[in-house]
Image 1 (cartoon, helix red, strand yellow):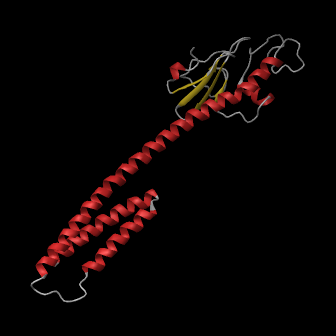
Image 2 (spheres, helix red, strand yellow):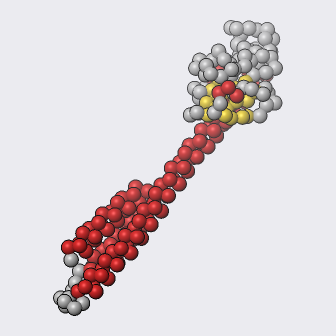
Length: 216
């Protein structure tokens, strides 16, 4: 019987290890199933009546076979749990990546109304000139900065957004575009992802390669 007890204790340890992994994954019903199987086996393995000497070897053999079957099932479940953990980790990474790309692109999209408002107001002699302290004769996107967009059009523009290489915090690894009367490049960064829009008619692009930002 001592050998059976050792095997049973080892099986219990395996089940507890799998149950802990499943618990961490939040799959509580699977933990309950494991507990039910294990406790049920403990009940059936505890003799209610005395076992005769003639039937003892056969009973022990049956118990050993049952334990081995359960251990095989637990090992299979361990593999399935490990695969589930790997899938959850991969899904989390993809979710973070997609979230960063989306947020960066949405930040650039958010800049567009402010950029076009600046373009409309920045004309010689305009009463709404957004940069009169810099120039009253420039036009279009010339002279545009992120601070001017925040102060005149959208105070909630995120920090990691820029429209000129002279803007505070502009990434040194990015070759920006100085705004002119006709052109600009709006840039945003979230995590390791950049999004940008080059020229008024340009599309919004995103990349992890800083060298590609603001390139046509």
